[in-house]
Length: 80
Image (cartoon, rainbow, N blue to C red; front, side, top):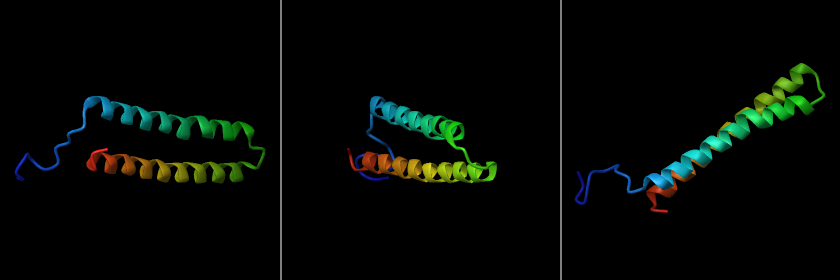
């Protein structure tokens, strides 16, 4: 235990955490549902190529969203 309080306790309020969670949920919905749906509707390639493009999109978007989540968490620790 460190003087001044237990380690790992966040001073972030509910309002800040709620908007960050809402932002992640909105980005997830857009990136995992809306964009792939639009890609399927607009791509005029073979099914195998379409599947590969969608898989690539989901993997890249997941990595980007994970990176963004880590950035949000680091900002929390630095007091932003």
